[in-house]
Length: 282
Ligand SMILES: NC(=O)c1ccc[n+]([C@@H]2O[C@H](COP(=O)([O-])OP(=O)(O)OC[C@H]3O[C@@H](n4cnc5c(N)ncnc54)[C@H](OP(=O)(O)O)[C@@H]3O)[C@@H](O)[C@H]2O)c1
Image 1 (cartoon, protein in one colour):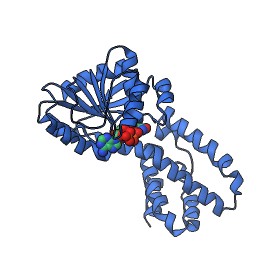
Image 2 (tube, protein in one colour; image 1 turned 90 degrees about the vertical axis):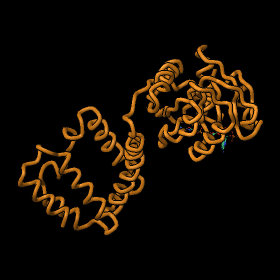
Image 3 (tube, protein in one colour; image 1 turned 180 degrees about the horizontal axis):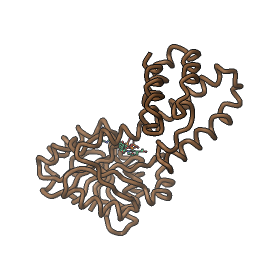
């Protein structure tokens, strides 16, 4: 029996996948408005629409798929409602928050965890069709993780365990991988414009280079994938870059340059490494 608190994009999708698996029955489905909860029940194909925690029925598995900033107050409200029975498993799906945010529920006997699908739930019908094989980061109480590995398998996900306390570093990894890649694209576009490249050519010029480098780094590993002046020990070229970089890009170029020297590792002779570091730290 599964209760869904926060029947939005993710809640509807996981609810429908759970119901379709034949291994879970969706019972109570809560949203802020009855209209939204009713739409969720229709989409999932079962359950009871609710718009308040009052009157919720006990269940052995609870998904708290409310927005991140509502998880702690919702956990508090559920813990105080008396509906959580000892041994109940409660989980949230946030990428950033730890299972620990559900601690008030542990205090009333629940086992708590977080299960974060690395997937974008823009539209539930499409998400249901495309979800199979999605990696889901799992952390929390051991008893909850056992139950959630089964749940993940039933909805077609691939769960993997995070280290205890590892959620912040895990989320930082995802942010660096997706957000900083976008920021690097922006920096490269700014420099290409400065060099006189026509706006219409920016994507065609930078796209294949960036996609090729990313594919190489993922398949060969970052050290082997490195090309360019730093791994060649070409300090004169790095000095020419530094001479034309605008002041706002100097710190990021220098910081990433230092990091790139570290990634190059043994591919860079010691003397070249020292010369480059002195230049980048100048
Ligand atoms: N969307 C994604 O791609 C994605 C990916 C991975 C993880 N997640 C995680 O999944 C969780 C839910 O995200 P979502 O995108 O599904 O959010 P969403 O579409 O905005 O749905 C949130 C649901 O919670 C309800 N709700 C909002 N505020 C509430 C409150 N204060 N108390 C009780 N219910 C409340 C909403 O009710 P109404 O329907 O009435 O507005 C809605 O049913 C978040 O923890 C998010 O980090 C999302």
